[in-house]
Image (cartoon, rainbow, N blue to C red; front, side, top):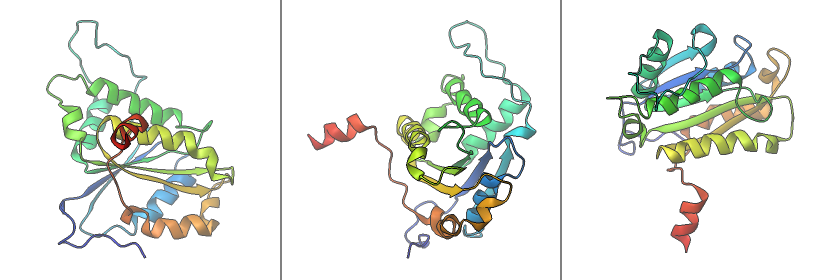
Length: 209
């Protein structure tokens, strides 16, 4: 059975998890599954929860080449601070059209801006951290979540992060994931799973050649 690393095994004891909730339904199935998994984290690990619906975050506008100094708004500053402060970032998004929800995609679009934000060093600060996903979908065939998995994996690969994969659940009506026994079993050990360094397929192919 998978277990969390002991103090001797874990090189980073100061683990802190940021859970980013991106559902359009407050406390929806995806958030419930994320909370079920978080219950099994070691007590010493920090936890912070941000519901994107609680932040007045405008659509991302790419101003990298417009010559004006970037002026982050309050919501963006909150997300940036929480993101760079976490060792583990959990993207909790329901599967909408086989990918992220609109709220989640907007948040990740801001990562593009932070890469060039003066003084941010976003890429350097994210390298070596861990990215996870949690999603609940109406379809019972889990292969349909492949696009979401690829998007998260490649995001981690670009930033040289570890990737822990996606905790998958089934549900459509409010609270339905609670009776998904397979998802609830997975939740108990999900965050104890491995987080290997994400690599793009062409990088893995080059190493194998």
